[in-house]
Amino acid sequence: MSNWGNRVAAELKNLNPKNLGRVGVLLGGRSAEREISLLSGNGVLQALLAKGVDAHAFDPGLQNPAEIGHHGFDRIFIALHGRFGEDGTIQGLLELLEIPYTGSRVLASAMAIDKVATKQIWLSNQLATPRFDLLRSNSDWKKIVDNLGLPLFVKPAHEGSSLGLSRVNQLEELPAAYELAAKFDSAILVEECIVGAELTCPIVGEGDGAEALPVIRIVPPLAGYDFHHKYFSNETQYLCPTGFDQALEKEVQTLALAAYRSLGCRTWGRADVMLDEKNGNKPYLLEMNTSPGMTSHSLVPMAAKAAGVNYDDLVLWLLLQTLKTNPVAGARK
Image (cartoon, rainbow, N blue to C red; front, side, top):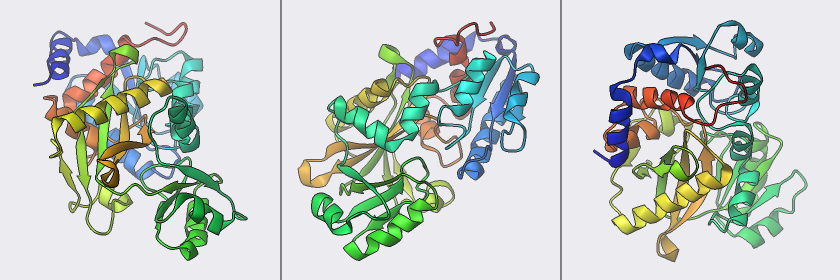
């Protein structure tokens, strides 16, 4: 078991679930990732109930979010993904209601979901991330290709789970990729393609106390790591350990930690990374997830298991952080 795993066991050993009070699990929501959030949230809910926590589901996609304050929740586990759940909006509401919650606060959540803002912060901190540009309907497609090369990735700037994502291998494919992404967002990112292994590194904690969990290597089928293969297919392979040497895994963990801290994240997150096989497997940051998935195919539970922490204990520990992280002003005890 890892050092973090030992600390989790020690912190949970003498925990009385009753001390967590009445807990709301936010799930579902209104984003394009609603289906996945329902899977994550129901997993979290069942884990908390199994641990003896007084936990209750709340779906802000079906219920008025303003009603959260009428349910007597002492703290909230956010299992929402995407807009209106991972973008700072629900976090702002909870701060106004003075209810402690899991995950990053308003500013970090808003920045992390914006891929352009995230890249700008990483670049200002000299953290490696693929070169990029913004696409518009009147963009000079040839100029984009001349600048970034081929292949390229086109994606909505504020969506996750590979929604609206396209790989562009030829100049002529750019307009169609733009149109697909524009169905999800008005801000469209085009990014150079880093060719190599795809990794992900979960982070837990806050500030100087944050630490990286084991790195996972994602080996998708030839069809690619799309929405289906992320959440429903058994074709994608996940390797933990990755098969790379420990020095490279440590380099990825160090980069992920720096990325997490630069955005001011807390509780947990997951940095997605590509290795540039043409440049000695140099790691490049793709994005930061501040409300990672908690489904049967999700990667944070996978890394936690490799560190010696099972799913139910992971969920309880994440909720426990609402007792320890910097509380919202005037938050109820």
